[in-house]
Length: 392
Ligand code: FEO
Image (cartoon, rainbow, N blue to C red):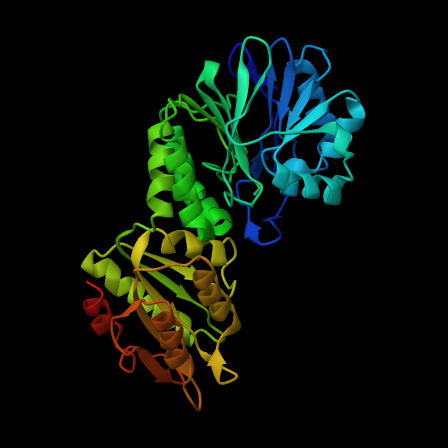
């Protein structure tokens, strides 16, 4: 438990054990599930945490509430990393009412069999008084699920933002950010956005527009630090990513069976390095331990304007992990990128052509026809220097 202000307490938990968030995304630095208590004449809990943390969570909540019973549980978002302990909290506090919007109700029933009489449905812009302060609710659909909303505590200029402005990575005991915090979390915030919210650029823009009139001095997200000092930075980053804005640079993404496509990818990286062109390189086939794989690749797709994809020909098509990456680009409605494909084959090349077709279907600008080479990679056979020249 950490006191954030006279009324606001952090009661979230760190998860260092989970290997894959949503069963998909690596967590090298863990993740936090943030929850908050607002203690006034009435006491509200804002979201819960993932299951497995019942004891720690309850201890935090009890301490923050000073032993008083909770009056409300605000459910901003129903994804189970925040809603798993709803039943547990309802049993612990039998007089507590859930504050939720109409879209949340079927999810509360479906996940937790919550009786309707325990839910107070709130509408867009409605406020619920806690005594000397009020919680006001704004819908933020698809940031990150259709029922998602945010909660505004005007008397504290504080936005309880749900997944918005969230990041991978556990939080330290201070919880609230300092000058250096944004820099420490920036890469993981980008990776979080790209993996979790990246499909929903337009709804994020709508939400940012809606919240732009608020004088926000504190952002309490459901993942990562509480933002005070770094508010301008985190809002600017989310704004830029949700507008699909990128900088000049190359994201090399490849999969390889026997190392030939990988060798071509490495050769391209070396050529880019020599030319001073910013780049990132990601192995999707998991050959290098510690690689972020697909999640790192998606992060850098949101960073750079050029995507270069390497795939051997496999079953007369694209190597499966690379195909998954291309589908992930489609799912995230990635647009406005330059594109180049390369890869090895043994008896018939198909991957480069099919990669180009997929890229064209997303309106990417093909920089060239691509480079499909037979059998082994050699520097003489595969001219990555010329490819690097095209990518300037
Ligand atoms: Fe952190 Fe969409 O849940």
